Amino acid sequence: MMSTHYIAGQWLAGQGETLESLDPVGQGVVWSGRGADATQVDAAVRAAREAFPAWARRPLEQRIELLERFAATLKSRADELARVIGEETGKPLWESATEVTSMVNKVAISVQAFRERTGEKSGPLADATAVLRHKPHGVVAVFGPYNFPGHLPNGHIVPALLAGNCVVFKPSDLTPKVAELTLKAWIQAGLPAGVLNLVQGGRETGVALAAHRGLDGLFFTGSSRTGNLLHSQFGGQPQKILALEMGGNNPLVVEEVADLDAAVYTIIQSAFISAGQRCTCARRLLVPQGAWGDALLARLVAVSATLRVGRFDEQPAPFMGAVISLSAAEHLLKAQEHLIGKGAQPLLAMTQPIDGAALLTPGILDVSAVAERPDEEFFGPLLQVIRYSDFAVAIREANATQYGLAAGLLSDSRERFEQFLVESRAGIVNWNKQLTGAASSAPFGGIGASGNHRPSAYYAADYCAYPVASLESPSVSLPATLTPGISL
Image (cartoon, rainbow, N blue to C red):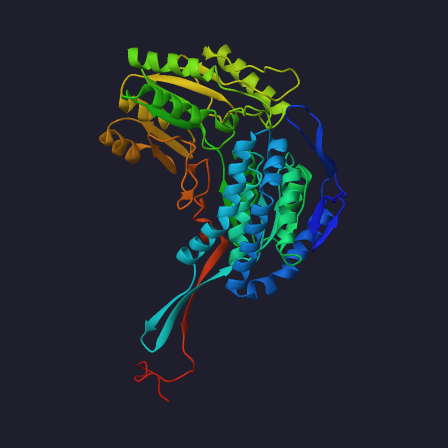
């Protein structure tokens, strides 16, 4: 059996709190161990620091070769990794397989982004050469989420290693088995000891790592609550880089369109894919008042009620698997109950079809009559409907949030989209495409409470290295004309 942590090239048993992950449906133990205590976190940071000089000096092409071996290893173990992702998160196998593919593709995309956005440039400047280079920060921590436990931390780790940093990786305590298998792929690819260290654990481990004085930076994907705590903790430390990718209370605005079923399909893909556990999922659906809006909602409810929900490995394959845990399911059901208590009308009530399992059916609530709607990210298959009278009202409602991750518009009018593009507040703005869709060749991040202006994906290269400007000459020499007031 593998031990819990990977530090300085060695697997070690944990010395901290007991840790286990559960199958969200059957509640069987998928993985168990003990978290890293502060001493082990310190050892991981020290190992990364010791490995950093040699890794940073390693030629770029050699680092790329290692990353490409990692991608090949992932590809060869794709079925195994997809099954572990499904088993631990509850997401269907078809979706877990797409996550592994994204992990594989991240290497080539990161190399392209590194060359385009960082790299090296030079040119003559008077009697010198002006050179722009980029250098790694040193030792960075990566905090991963549970919803994409392979792909999202991978989106920080790959560009960080490519730039020459060394990493201490702390995955979600709900998905330790995915993290362990990912580390085994890195080891199989030949990663040197200390370059990437794994510390498993919950709050105790996370607090110790985030507070460690030996870090040069921290890259985080997860909840706004935790991200805000990290932002406060890193306040007054400008020498450390902090990249935050957090959630959103994302609006999807619908106008009357010619193809009603296409609109319904796009709404379902936006709100209920991954059981609503994507940070870009639509949380608020803005629908016009009147007969067409009524027809859209009737069709949306009818189709959503037929969505297949089940275990990750069921056949025929479900559209939605489980949410991450029983406690997450209970929180969502309580949120639905709270909204109904405040005046929301259930168009399709979210239910728990199997007692003791974290499976939920889609929920759709009309919250138009709720006076003070909570500006929260309900991280699951719960969609709030708001009816609007005109497009100006729809835009105001869409922007009525502290968050700013994603916003979308379904409309047959390009003029409407151009207005929405200018007036909406979000880092991702889609037109007639699902809100959860994003291009790998683009940045991924938001404004407001959704991030701190350091988007990931294609722009991760920006926060994984810092620019160094140089004026260079092979020898020191006198200028043709001395500065006034100097005699030699």
